[in-house]
Amino acid sequence: MAKLSSFLLLGALSSLVAAAPAPAPTAAPNLEERATTCTFSGSGGASSASKSKTSCSTIVLSALAVPSGTTLDLTGLNEGTTVIFEGTTTFGYEEWAGPLVSVSGTDITVTQTTGAVLDGQGAKYWDGEGSNGGKTKPKFFYAHSMISSKIENLYILNPPVQVFSINTATDLTVSGVTIDATAGDTGDLGANTDGFDIGSSTGITITGANVYNQDDCVAINSGTSITFENGVCSGGHGLSIGSVGGRSDNTVETVLFYNSEIKNSQNGVRIKTISGDTGTVSGITYQDISLSGITDYGIVVNQAYDGTSGSPTNGVTISKFILENVTGTVESTATNILVECGSGSCTNWTWTGVSVTGGKTSSSCVNVPTSGGVSCSL
Ligand SMILES: *[C@@H]1O[C@H](CO)[C@@H](O)[C@H](O)[C@H]1NC(C)=O
Ligand SMILES: *[C@@H]1O[C@H](CO)[C@@H](O)[C@H](O)[C@H]1NC(C)=O
Image (cartoon, rainbow, N blue to C red; front, side, top):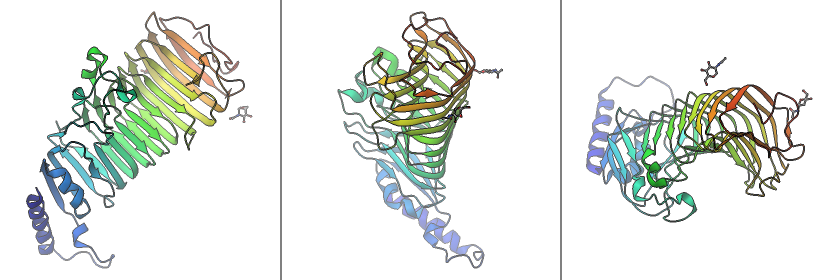
């Protein structure tokens, strides 16, 4: 693959040299950083791509077979780089922590051609224990320190465990991504296949995602100005804030979950804060959310996470929690709404157009805000 890529590189460079003079007096152009498309493929492609990545303005990854135990390392890309997956990308089986793919840089676009698939071969790992035991499973995709960047249209098949880790990212838009871990439902073998885990990030928009998995569709541990819209979440644990607490960053502010469907999932709307810890959760809105086939809780606020159920703590405050037009049904064995707040830690909530039916009305709600239309029976 090294030969192929240097051939393409040379080809592109010579065509550049033959082209008309570059527009005048911007900074001296580095030819290697000019419009160069590099294509990498097969079993040597990942390593070649990692070595040559800063010589290419467009990186085409064609039917890559990423060797076991290695990361497709696309960190530190040049500003403005485009990465295009085509065909099926596979990742060799090995028990390790991953990630299988890692991308960082500014003004980066990661996309794929129609029909491309990133196949994590999860079935080889799934043992029902997820990240809590059994085989060590590689995380899939680190989108860490991606700045003013886009991830578009990726199709992630059979992730071993957690999929997207979005961390220290700023102004990142993720659009049209599908996560398909449906096969992990068989025998309850897939677990902890979180769709999007977000931490310490600002200005994140996830739009039009289809997530079929076995854990949180989205879990926001920390961050500011985060939107998830026009999405479908199925088979997992719902749209979640948290767990919040116990990390270096325990602030979640200004989050909007909008126009999305949560079906056949443990929970719909969920905020969980860790018992005994401190932090701030503020300005969380769920608007135009539909629920169906929920097996645990339609709406749940749990301030006793990792602690004693029924004994919520108040070190993490939850203010301005807005529900607007959150409707649907849960299974008859499930609970419609559960709110377990610490003493005085839940303030300025506003719920309108909330209707969750089909399940039990909880008798365990504590410290429920007394205004703003909040109630455990809506
Ligand atoms: C309520 O949300 C649903 C989506 O769950 C949407 O179809 C409907 O138009 C919304 N209703 C209003 C009044 O906005
Ligand atoms: C809660 O609302 C009250 C009255 O509207 C306001 O004075 C207070 O600043 C708000 N608190 C927060 C944390 O937003």
